[in-house]
Length: 73
Image 1 (cartoon, rainbow, N blue to C red):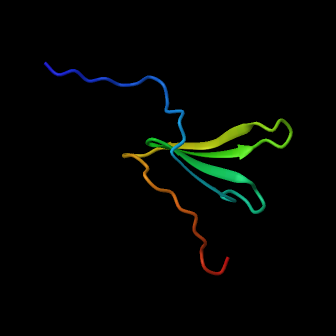
Image 2: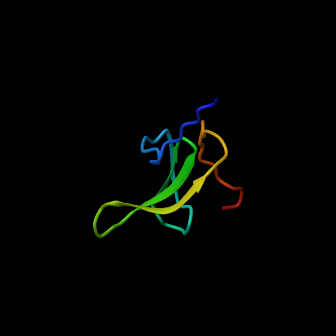
């Protein structure tokens, strides 16, 4: 007999974060890693709250996130 347990809720603790403009120029966005979930969040200028733009679950734990710049940008 094998027991297998799953959590029903998503992870809430942020392990890694990287700030930048990912969707459009002059946008203040933060890419955060929560265990095996990567989220792109943006600050709503009217309310001051964080809004999740995109969420993606990856096949492993995210251990490191680094900011990089493409040459010629």
